[in-house]
Image (cartoon, rainbow, N blue to C red; front, side, top):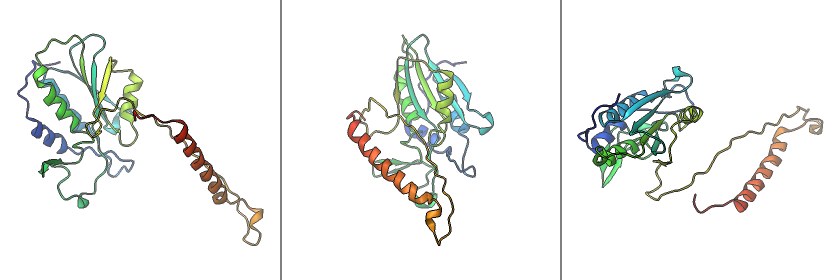
Length: 237
């Protein structure tokens, strides 16, 4: 249940430190893949203290430990969704000049794993809405925090399957250099597999070299890619 709203939550830099300090690496390598539960729990607690009604939605399978959050302030149809993902890419700490799990200020910039892409979006949202907590909302303000964007996108898949949240519009907090991007490219993944046939080196023509065939396939794919670039372009991307 939502609590009475308060704008006395920690300041922006403290909240940034809080989320950066909670590792949530997403990886196809099970040895380093992590749950994002700690981040989601923290965000839920903070948004609840600001008056939001929070719902935690596990991904499938629940044993993965990957969780989504829908936090809602206000009610009714329509509304605005502020959305982002709570996981980060893997990190090699030896290649960092600072601790990636600690917010570091240097030369007017902030450093930390996920500070822009994109756990840092949620503290920015908290700071931005502080003056609006006592406002009377005609449509709901909805915060969506998803899991596993960097790998399986299972968080977004789970949310899409539920058909929630429904709203009039949405802002995605991915880093764009502070330039608004009004459209988003889709993605399709496919694979091509070729099965060769072994042949003796004394007469390779009796076999079927899969590498030779793949060479031809790749050449066609490069040509197809160039055709697509020429036929489909949009300055909005």
